[in-house]
Amino acid sequence: GEKVNLITESPVTDVRDIIQPIRNIENDVSGIENVFTAVRLATDKWKQFRRNDGRWNKLIFIVTDERGDDAEAQLEEVISLCKRFGFRVFVVGNAAVFGRKEGYVRWQYE
Image 1 (cartoon, rainbow, N blue to C red):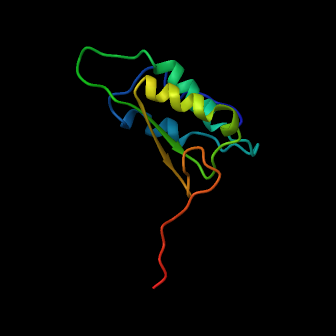
Image 2 (tube, rainbow, N blue to C red; image 1 turned 30 degrees about the vertical axis):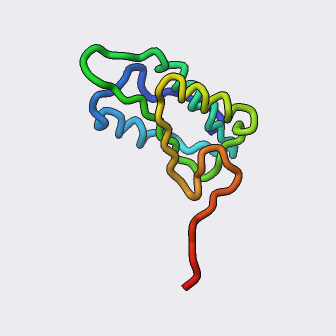
């Protein structure tokens, strides 16, 4: 949405810990989607995170129906940050291709 907020202040080891906070996210009616601002905030917050007690994955899940209003200004820089610090980003949504204006679906007429 228009405002970007972190849901947790520390990493979670059990996904059940974040289910309720995610369900409590309020609908943003501004019409503005700052997708890459959110990814940058998460990357900046957790880029140096490492633990000595095993392997940890740094994953970002984006649920959206568009590329974001800030894609033009931040796309390439955010991709570089994610690669540099080992974040994997997954996008879920209606033809939600990371940062693209249009998504294409492979389809063949019978």
